[in-house]
Image (cartoon, rainbow, N blue to C red):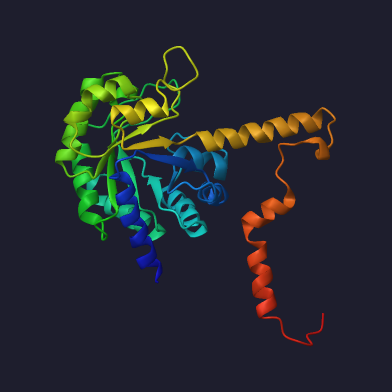
Length: 300
């Protein structure tokens, strides 16, 4: 099977997962290693967001600093490290509608199963005022992306941040309806609570993805809805875009604090064993190859 055949098969698989009766719990990785661990845990697909890529690769905030090449390269490494379908964050498409083809081409070549394009003009995760792309401009980007793909199973997902930016659920729904009319394969709306999703789901004639670990509860540091509540409200995909990165960072912080406090490495039960870690990395596969190609009598 050629790489193109392999990635095309993953795209078909992802389409099936999205349209299955049970919601897809999409665990977001942040690099090749975490993607492999997602696969080992038995999840059927994974995701790379610009938030995780910016943090893990460059220790930078997610404020539009990543280039298309940098994000596509990170996605390519993930797709190569695992057999899972990998969905990627396509930011705002990186270009205006006439040039969006280049982003689609880059992500298709990287081997991912699709990309989401957003209408957010910036300011995510910060106190800076954010804005929204005009609906008409966003629909043209969606149309251009659909025209650019060479694999019909490569998903073009339209993301509206209206509920996040303005808190206006009705504006978000109106935008999503326009994006579906433009041909989007799926929609994505962060910061839409499950109770609101239940009310609007019937108005959106496309699969619906939500962010299951966005800390959007008023006055708190937690999601507004549980995974179970989103599933009951009609979500087709529940994305966990931050959980693995947050867990990894907490584990490193805890270990460093313990070591700085004088604890011995042998006393730290949260550190995975070296041998188990080596199993994840395929050292046993190397040993089998080395044994198969070892030349008798070779000087050492």
